[in-house]
Length: 218
Length: 123
Image 1 (tube, each protein chain N blue to C red):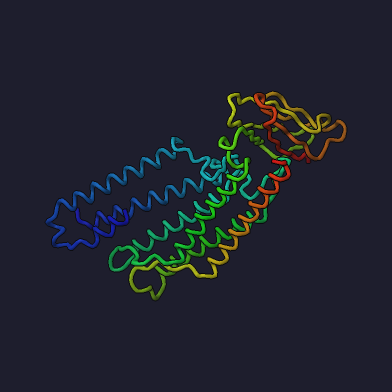
Image 2: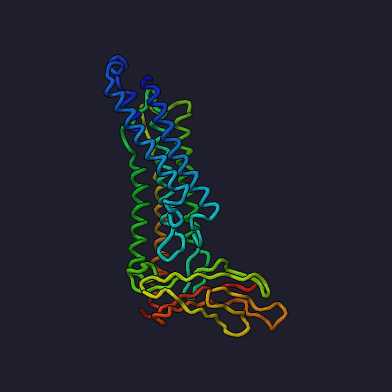
């Protein structure tokens, strides 16, 4: 798109007025790119392109490496557009890309790759490739005795049976959790509740595969 | 239609696409439709998530570097003495050094935690 912008502006007006093919090619290219861009935006808006995991790691938590790569990509793209579009006397690409920008993108990308490498060295970071894994996530990380329930979800990868058994620790006086992962805190008027409760999901297919999440009873 | 219309339309397309995509992503990041859970936390052995200073400093450095560069570009465009020719402003070496240090702290912290967890679990 930016190249087209530059090429169109650089074309001599007297020749351009006679070269209908150049003019047509410009509009066809622009129309195609525009439709493609609109289609992408439309698919993103209706959810056909799912962005919910854009900066997530396989385990479900957000990734700082992905976040900073996203930020830098947008900022560099926006800066390049501003520079090209505002060039005088006509739109033009920078003749030289400064070393600093290349180093910045290099740091960002290599940091992301090293981060993936570190994860690959740990079973926790690899998901299915590292073998069976259960990941627990709750709708909240705290509640109060007699307060709101918390819905937990367990994501199972690397196993055929994706069902889990739920348990809490300590097993007595810390509330209860049903078979669907809905945690109910202990009543406010009962015995002293623990400050922390560990919720555990254990795979039914392989009981050695489990994950825990700790919630606070404030 | 003249070529100036083509240029105007090309500008519009880039602005709509880049701006639209950035707006959608920013809105979904803020409203939680894009998962940002525990962005600033690390997961401990017992499943608890704790605030990670390494992640916080990298988050701040990322935003600061991105914003300062964007401002630098805007200044170079609107400045009283625009640079000769079409030039992307360079990033100061000190900024790059600080960003590199920030990444080193983050990756070092991550590597340490991963190793520590693996050893602790006896894997």
